[in-house]
Amino acid sequence: MARAAFIVCLLMASAWSSHAVMFKLSPNTQKCLKEDIQANQLVMGEYEVSDVPGQIIDYVARDTKGHILSQKEHITKGKFSFMSEVYDAYEICFISKVPPHQRGIVQEVSLQTKKGVETKSYEGIGEASKLKPLEVDLKRLEDLSDSIVRDFVLMRKREEEMRDTNEKTNSRVLFFSIFSMCCLLGLATWQVLYLRRYFKAKKLIE
Image (tube, rainbow, N blue to C red; front, side, top):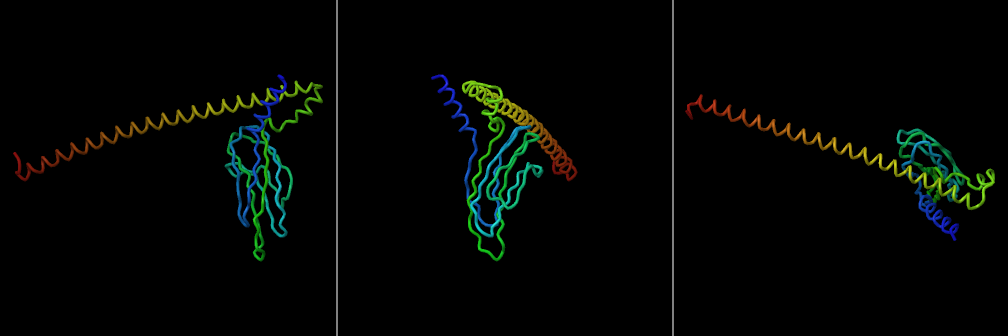
């Protein structure tokens, strides 16, 4: 019973973290999927493209700075993998190319990706370490829990950074508002004194 509960929790967590999508790609267009990934994480994926004679689809994986991490041309079905160097938003783009003389047809693209702990082969770990099935499930659940904790730590760090940025922005806005008010008061005082001297010079007031 306890083992069944562990397996149910594990399957629920795996389903929550798994990424599988299917979309349609129009001729001579590109579609990109983007996701934030932590540093030093292995990313693996499988793709499959519906075959249309004469049409070509390429894929490229890159970071926000344009560094290419994985790339292949004329794809139909295959796998890819790359390692994230820093925390960043990484994207995988599929690019359709159709010759000018050919009428393009919409193609279907299916993509499934895994990252971090999802890429580990626990069956191989269990066989190498001679672990029982329950121990393998516990090991998988432990690694998944650690991954979730790291994600929460990262989210908390980003929240603190955003809060600090927000507080600094509020302080700057307050300082700018006070500075603007002082400038307006100074300008208003100068205008009053100038008009007073002007009217006195014209003998309009005493």
